[in-house]
Structures are given as C-alpha cells and as structure tokens.
Image (cartoon, rainbow, N blue to C red; front, side, top):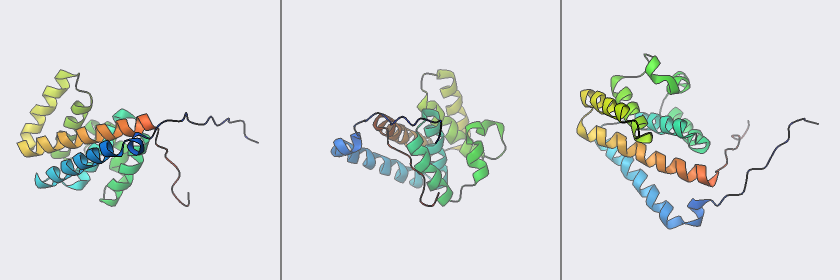
Length: 162
C-alpha cells in the first residue's frame, strides 16, 4: 500500500468540446500562423521550439506533451529540448532561433517593455519583417491553446507502453 494519496483533478469543462465553433476558429488561426511561418521561411522545427518555450512559460503540461513529441518528429534533439528554458545560456541555438524565442517570450509576457524592445531589436538583425510577424503569430496561437488546455485541465497520460 502506498503512502501517496491521489487527489482527483477538479472537474472542468473542456471548453474545446463545449464550444466547438470557437475551438475550430482557434484551430484555423493556428493553421494560418503555421502557414505564414512556412511562407516566411521559418521551418517547422523552429515553430515547435516557439510552441514549447511559450508552453513552458505558461506551465501548460498538455501542450508541452504534444509539442515535445512534434519537435522530436521534426528532428529536434533531446539536448536542445532539455536546455530550452535556459536557451540564452547555451551555444545550441542559432541567431534566428534566439530571435524567435525572444519574440515568443515577449509576446507571452508583454508587460516587460524593456524585454520586448530588446527582442524586437535582436529580431530585426536576423529576421525579415515577415518572419518577425510569423514568429509573433505562432506565439499568439500557442498562448491561446495553452489557455484552452490549462483552463480545461486537459489530462496528460502516459504514452502506450510506458
């Protein structure tokens, strides 16, 4: 017998299921942001890094689970995923990736005007205006999905065989 007491999560409304029209609109916005990113020359691996970093900041377990698997499918390495919260302190990320990550963080925490100005300045050095716009749209989309999953308390279960 275990000493650990498992407390069931409070029951929440899965707002994606409760309001499917709004959720479908959110899905369409996310698909559009990924298309804009691709058109601007931002590869899917970079999009997944942005999705993961924003989800880390927001503490969205469900989105972290989904986008970790997606990043690995796109060829991302375990090392880079492991140090992503400390990306500024490594040499593992390109200038383009650093710029997109800084924009994603400033989009997620917009109250820090100094960080936002710094992120924009760094981005302008290595990203086109289309790429800046695309990175911000990707961050906006994942922020919205984080809120959907956090407020709905979407469960994260072990993968089959684990």
